[in-house]
Image (cartoon, rainbow, N blue to C red; front, side, top):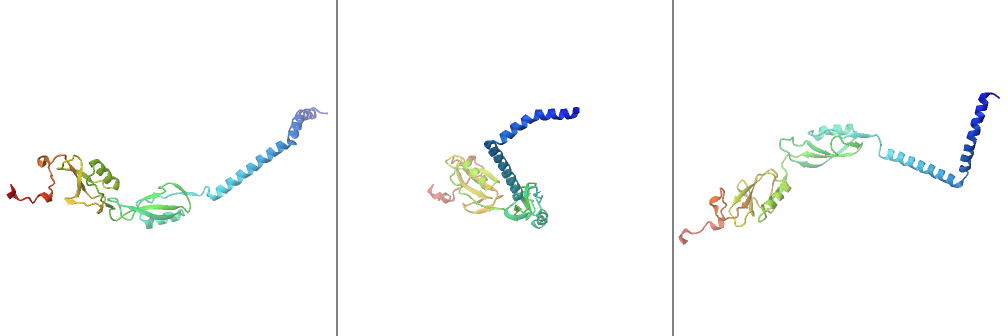
Length: 222
């Protein structure tokens, strides 16, 4: 027997006990059931991953194109190239912007989406948004300002007028015209909030408000 054969036989003698132990354990019913369970779980996970990859079209995503400022007609070609659908859902008025152009998209520009996804568009409107004037009479100055700004009126100034209760709102005007509650006006309409100065003395007020109901007093009574 050559030296190489002796080495092989020696290695087999060392490995054989280990193989016998493995074989004996594999013959154990509990070990076999555990191995079968592991194999079944592995197969189930593989099947689920394959199904998810097919269902979500993994790897078939595109970016929402930059269509801001474009007309719908021009943006339509860009959406078609990426196989995306689109739908106009809202409009907003922005000064110095091109009416009819796209203001923003949902999902936002550059987002990763699947082909066939619907992109929702907000367009620049041709006319300013009309907002109903709220009823601010006899409310506090702070409450009235918060109400007007929350509705979208930003061009609002305070005008102090004679009154018994300080910071009580007595009315609302626009360029000298009283604004009644419920009247619809553009969001950029300049508004003057008439706030009581807390004193009936109008000598210290630049723009006093005169109650017309008391303006017809006959001088002969004095």
